[in-house]
Image: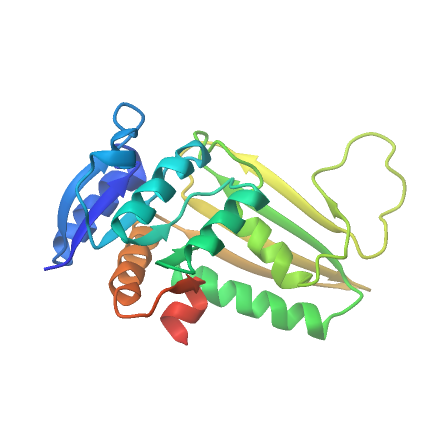
Amino acid sequence: MASAIVVGGAGRMGRLVREELSARGFGVVGSYDVDNIDELDELAPAADVAVDFSAPAALPHVLAYARRTGAALVSGTTGLAADQLDELRALGERNRVIWASNYSLGVAALRRATAMVARTLAGWDVEIVETHHNQKADAPSGTARALVAAVDPTGERPVVGGREGMVGARVPGEIGVHAVRGGTVAGTHEVHFFGPDEEVCLTHRATSRQIFVTGAVAAAARLLTREPGFYDFDTLMFG
């Protein structure tokens, strides 16, 4: 039986992850949060995989644990800076690592569809709207950022996070990204393509966090069958 630890295990996602790991046959040997996160550096027991749905501030401890134990790492932490993502990629030189802003199969399909439509409708205006519950700390969501990358893989287009005042006409090529927060929304993402006299809108709605949990635990099981490396969700699950 494979063993696992959960970072951020006391949060809403973390609790669901612990339940899903147990249901999928993993032995959960530890759960770590703000009050005991330092234990990851030296005291936490070795496990086959660490599943991290915590906060960017926990990353140094997660990395220390993975380096010390050789554990595979499944990270769903959003709001990571570019240098923190570089650290995860570097860890992939020795460990099996996957990072994804969203572990939903439907969102994976949305990213692929967004890339296809963006190529087909080159020159159309693009606006991305993401909606989440009122406790979400980061904005825009990691999934919204991934959708921006699907529209603009080279990162050359300007990104506008909301508009206010006399902003003038829309700049050709810019991508608008808007964050809405309220209630208990698990996650909704819309990609709008506006052309002359017509619009295409791609939408994904999550009705519970369980879809992300199921995907993350499935990724953990798949990751343990792979060689060391830094994987994205699409490649790991769909080749």
